[in-house]
Image (cartoon, rainbow, N blue to C red; front, top):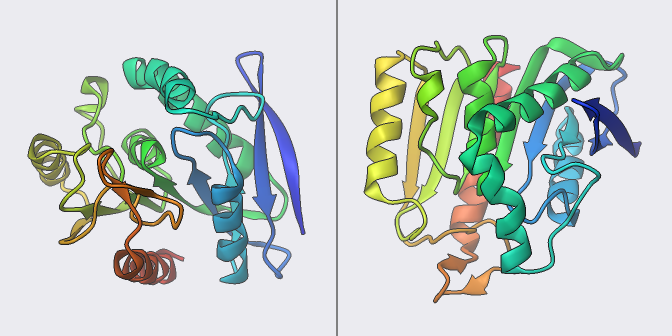
Length: 233
């Protein structure tokens, strides 16, 4: 059973998509969307997660379920949150708290996964939520906000990155690796040698922009996600 949930943060309505596993009570995986918003891509991922036996909740980071239709519109929605990581954290924490209180969700068994912009959202929840079990970033931005520099990370972290991704350079990889090491996190970074940005999206086919689907990286990264979920739940 799947349905839309409306939850409120600071007077703004957000529209999440809940996909329920067969069991009444189960762990839950939050899914953070790309810069396009909570679209069918993450809703489909939520359904796939539910088939694995976990509840899943595709969160809304923009409010009112907004979905962009162009590069310019997507960027205009994402950039304010990249510039204000405190607000970004408030929104993902609000989604976490909402899901945590759902009757069918095991409140102490919640993880998050995300794509591109959502990968950064996932990592920022791990940076701010001590009770989170796991965080997975698929071709996401890796650098952390300055204000999280002293926070301990208890979640198990998995970052999945394409070597040819022009949007995530070596500087982000280095800062992420240093941060995770300094915080003594349980973390992994897997690099897929022939993959670019958006390697999990079958519709990505713009090498000039740096977004190209890679079937092998998509399948292998999904297996790594499933292994981590089995480990933490």
